[in-house]
Length: 303
Image 1 (cartoon, rainbow, N blue to C red):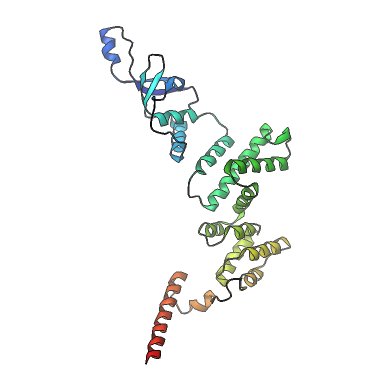
Image 2 (cartoon, one colour):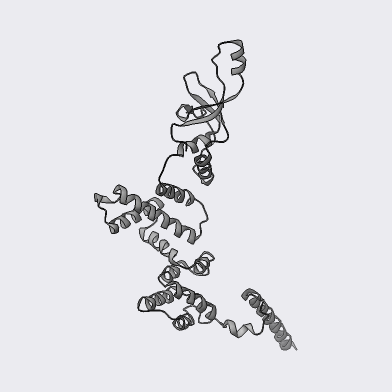
């Protein structure tokens, strides 16, 4: 694996001539290996070298395979070489270094968190991976203040470090990590915005079996839990268990703001539609039928 100060392949010109034969040979481009420390950026280079996702991929490629495409450079009178092309490859090669698995995890997470669109589930598992990696680093290097190895102290200190680096609160970091306790189906619903973030955090305290029952209750009532309902489900679970009947009763309640809402249970409507119809197709058909009914009523009133 290339390291800082390691050799790097490049194409260059050499202006030291000894014979006519060597002069002709040296005027040809050739590949040679020189230390990265001898490479200097092109003066007033107008193109920025950014640590973005593409740079991360380049760095990972160089770490695995080395620099496959040589750089273009020219020798300088004062010594060293000026880069003509390949500034990004040099920057990536400088970033490649021997690192532990935990250091690699932290670097990978930090690089990917720069993306614009990150799903809640992606952020949750990214925070968890970074938290666990930094906790292990803390246990080895006395990361926490005071040099203690207390597990609680390490967790708290790591939360604060992650929060500060991401401009988040430690509380929010912990809430995202809680989401990793959700079963995949509920995580998908969160990513699709079928469940809100705050209720999802509360639902993460349910056991996996209770979460599976919750999916059934949601299908039965055709409703997603509000924050207050999710908190009640969590309390029931912690007090001894939350049964499917409890979930259906809680989710079947009329929520604040839905007092004028007309709701139908799935089995009430299924008998009127083909089995292949999705809920969206059923909804669209109902709307069309209501529109036709309304037009008939209007014509009847005009007679």
